[in-house]
Image 1 (cartoon, rainbow, N blue to C red):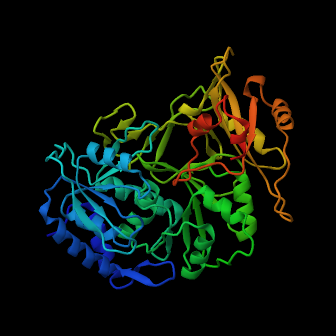
Image 2 (image 1 turned 120 degrees about the vertical axis):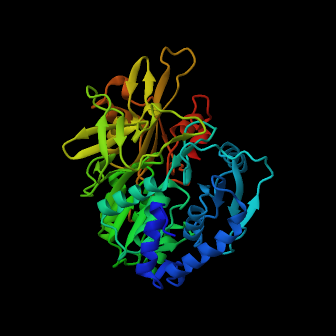
Image 3 (image 1 turned 30 degrees about the vertical axis):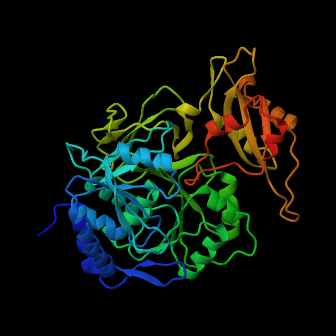
Length: 484
């Protein structure tokens, strides 16, 4: 019987076309799965999940496992709802997500390389009464401790896949290198759905060590690398790097890509990096097709079939409304129709637009309130990065000292550049940097304190938490903390 699910229809066409051709490779270049073997594994897994009823939620926590496509196909056929969970999620977050999403079971790979197993949860039957049953629930990376999910049907996932592949020029002649988590929205849309819907093979990698990634890129002859800024930063600082003659497309998402990082990577590998901007709620939004990397925070033009509208037309930086066939149905369990629904999503990011495209200048939650005046961190960061010897700068607000009239004060963490010949970091002076900022910025925008650190901490998705930096570098912190 012909499936009415658009992703399954696309998979049937992929399977017919690709058959015994390689679908998934391991980091050595060995074939881990052909397309036909993915189908065989899907049928095998389908027999295991026959005990569940349509509409039940199965959490999948298997890392970048070669059985991901088979599990998704099997669940779509059984009309089960898939909830991807990252391997790095802690037990408390995991339990909260399972409870809120009313998961019936967890699919887990106990050890790397083992076949995934199904573990029933000892909970009452609390299957959601779906109005429009989703195929997938994506957890958000919101600012609150309580997780929530976004509901997607297969048509949303397929639309996102088509928009990304058509915009970036990715085809089944390419080989994706999969080191970003498949369970994250970026990996799901750039790795998993292109394999299912368009037959784009991928390398499954679990080693996130930068040099190992480069060596595996060389071994496998991968042509497309969806990465994150911290990977490209590490690659640009390496010596004796392997040649990557087959790599043709480098994509960066998850966090803003600095101009300096892009330049150093281009010097090392003679390849540009294309910035990609998206959100869990709607998939891809913008893409820097030209990849000139001349403006901090630049993310290019909207991707194919995505329409952007500036919310505050009078402001220099504004939120946007995203209209796209890939926008999810809404949040679960509590909807927020003003933010997400009816094909529209309003991100918390602040964007500025010019003739070349859009650039991200911050988030609503990042704006610093200095005695009633609003400071956008990106503007201050851009000035700090113009100072010779500054490799990375992150600006954040922290509570002002006791007795001060301001609500917050501007602070910054700065990473100094290294001398290529010696490897030693450039010596930077706080007062010189502050004076450099005063030459261009208003007095209230100049950082009251600048902390010099060896590296800016990021999470698994490559994102920087300004809130965490504000906590770590609070006004009462001891000087010894600054060298950590």
